[in-house]
Amino acid sequence: MKTKITIALTGLNNTDNPGPGVPVIRGIRESEEFDPRIIGLAYENLEPGIYMDDMVDKTYQVPYPSEGSDVLVNRILGIHKRDPIDVLIPNFDAELYAFMRSEKLLAEAGIKTYLPTLEQFEERHKTNLPDFGKKYDLMVPFSKSITRIDEIEKLKEDFEYPVMVKGKFYDAYLAYNEEQVRMNFNKISAKWGLPVIVQEFIKGTEVNVVALGDGKGNTIGAVPMRKQYITDKGKAWSGITLDDQKLLDLTYKIIQSMKWRGGMELEIVKSNKNELYIIEINPRIPAWVYLAVGAGQNLPEALVKLALGKEVEPYTAYEVGKMFIRYSYDLITNVKEFEKLSTLGEL
Image 1 (spheres, rainbow, N blue to C red):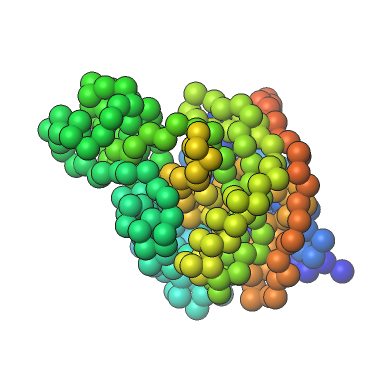
Image 2 (tube, helix red, strand yellow):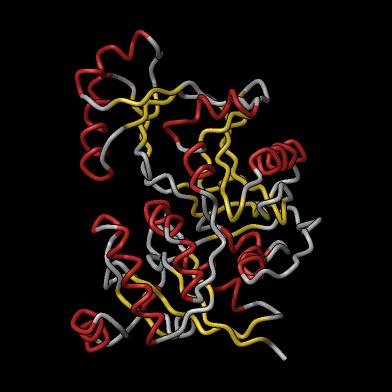
């Protein structure tokens, strides 16, 4: 008999810039061990996952992390008093700090999580990537953090164009000149704050790895893929699993060196010289994780097991050549559902 469990998670924005919530739910619902009740935690009342009745059993609206860590965590604790949560899975970079800082408080209330430590979170940050590369003997592009627009003119002393311009949490744009850097600096800083990161552009093929670490240096699972189709937001709309031992070895090295705890996504560029450059390490499960499930590694289920303190056998294989293709779907709902969430904060 399957174990009944209540899991709360964020990331229900299943749009052209999708959050990981819905694919994580799909993986958990395919678990052979758990019979899950899913609580969706929504920041916006038009996040599609809210209205997917076959995915989400109950939805609560929660405040943005920008309103304060304590405000967000207190809302979660308030929900937990009315509707007990066994496991909480945050799926956005911007909210992780609040939950990592409050991990002990949540655990004392009975809410289990499985998150990186604050030290792990900070050292792989985009602003710290050059130091990260030196510490663990990894190839990373040269980068520089800027906080003022007058610093842009001096970039030509350190960079050749084009360069990547990145936000501290999300967004990345290729800039071919100073004017494009200024435009993207203003766009990113207005949305995500400072600093803005300027990064050397590495010519090559972008590949990604979704992985799960047990916090002791062991890799529970890892699946590499190459994007087949990319949207104008730089998101994968199609991808295929790869047979690439070098990518897997690099992933094992990073997880072992850091003793990484929880899900992660490695964004890597394989240069024209066949060198692997780490361009980002995202500290949570990515939105394409269902490809890993389809290829034979149910990482969302394994994450829940780790959060519950269960022993998890590492995955040792996955299907190569497995593809995912996203599609748009018109979800029909009633305006009364929308109004109820907007007025009562729950659905």
